[in-house]
Length: 138
Image 1 (cartoon, helix red, strand yellow):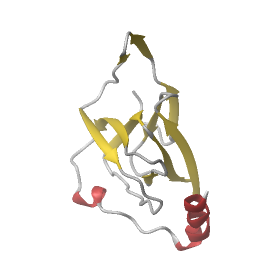
Image 2 (cartoon, helix red, strand yellow; image 1 turned 120 degrees about the horizontal axis):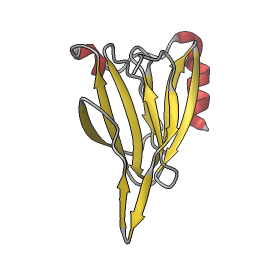
Image 3 (tube, one colour; image 1 turned 180 degrees about the vertical axis):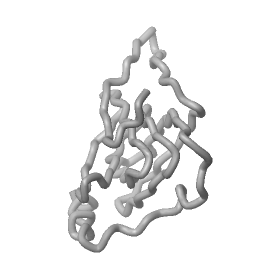
Image 4 (cartoon, rainbow, N blue to C red; image 1 turned 60 degrees about the vertical axis):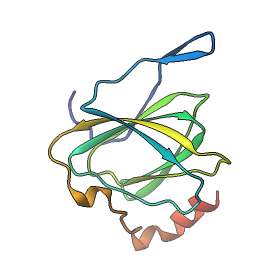
């Protein structure tokens, strides 16, 4: 897979069998599961050598990405399975406005070693503070 410079969305393929939902996996170097608790604050993170491939499997959240000097909100929810691929060097974060935690699968693709800075929140660029506040209030 060529390394994209843009955030991509694609449908999650799953099948139901009785009370069990089976989802087709994505190729990855490691798979992480995260629980995102209710918060309207949100933070941006930027990975230097990692592509995140995210799917909400329980609850819902707003994924915020900073691309081309603009903030973009991508609403993800369990009843509409959608994978989001976030390439390296794209700041992104999540805001959960729901009443319960959202559970997210991340099928991580590694392109080099992790950097401790990858997991530290980044400040919102001064020129985007108002747009960030608007997204938080939405």
